[in-house]
Amino acid sequence: MTGIGVVAPGGIGAKAFWELLASGTTATRAISLFDATGFRSRIAAECDFDPQANGLSAQQIRRMDRAAQFAVVSAREAVADSGLDMAELPPARLTVSVGSAVGCTMGLEQEYVVLSDAGRKWLVDHSYAVPHLYGYMVPSTLATEVAWEVGAEGPVALISTGCTSGLDAIGHGVEVIKEGGADVAVVGATDAPISPITVACFDAIKATSPNNSDPAHASRPFDLGRDGFVLGEGSAMLVLEDAEHARRRGAQIYGEIVGFASRSNAFHMTGLRPDGREMAEAIRCAMAQARFNPEDIDYVNAHGSGTKQNDRHETAAFKESLGAHAYEVPVSSIKSMVGHSLGAIGSIEVAACALALKHQVVPPTANMHVPDPECDLDYTPLHARERRLDGVLTVGSGFGGFQTAMVLARAAGGRAG
Image 1 (tube, rainbow, N blue to C red):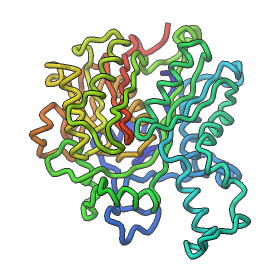
Image 2 (image 1 turned 90 degrees about the vertical axis):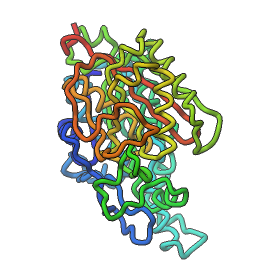
Image 3 (image 1 turned 180 degrees about the horizontal axis):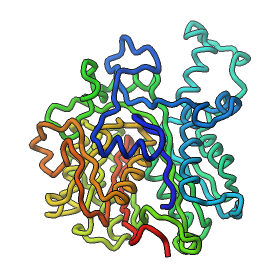
Image 4 (image 1 turned 45 degrees about the vertical axis):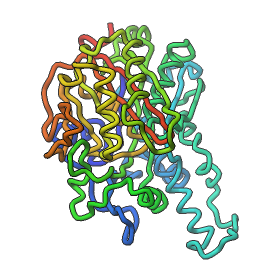
């Protein structure tokens, strides 16, 4: 990993993102992107994002959904951070892999409101639509925008596996490099789901927190009083390079991705088995690829959504896969600070893990005051913790039964070669 770019609640850019995490500050608040009056959950973690101030042209702003804007801005930062001159790279040796759970939700919803005259017309007149409506309907346009931005002519993919999309998109890019299909990959994920349709869907299944009176403390993973997750938005993109390619140019490196695995529980669209067996198997497989023993994991970045079902499920998975070491290793959930941005969060969490390796700091689980007795591991409550980090595990769990694990390792010296 040689470059990081982040658009996240609480700050734009990797530096602002890390400062928020290290300070234990929450970015959850009352929804401002639309009038949420009448909804059960009226809180979210929004990005204070001005597309023009972040370098997008008027044409790009008109063409792109908010999720695409996030992806392009974070990709630009990642490329600049890597120090690569994309013009000098053979375009066919550059791959792009972008994850998203809900695609261009905001653009689609806004256009439907116009076409249907605010829902009054069942039969809509397509002539009122923007010319880019087709692009909103095809999620792969998110990957296309990033590919255009960086000049990639190698494999370009959109990965949509629910809330593990960000991890799976990064894993896909790793595999393309490993199989020899590219030297450099721009990978990550983006989602901008804070819209009436998404909020209404989660309201219907009562998955999100109704703690509207105290949004700053609503996201409480592993806390006894938690009452659901807080919706978020954002994007993180990484530049990955083949090790030899990075060595030749003396690149700065944040760490290496040394293990990746995914499993499915084939059980229920939204439900989870309490024993966490499938997540545990993904963790074991990722550690085997990395040639890691449980004791080699120095920090676990939990999925930690803040629902009782998920928190207990992955607590069981950590115990099953890490054994006695599960009680020794610090675990935390950054969703307590930046919310749950669905498909984007996996890549945002990988960026957090890479920065944790760089700074040798475990970010905290904010708002965790009274631990759930059934979640009896060290969840790093309230405050960040300095600690030697050489190996980091990050996991994701998504609707549809998706379970993904990734292992990151610190690169000695922080510079290739």
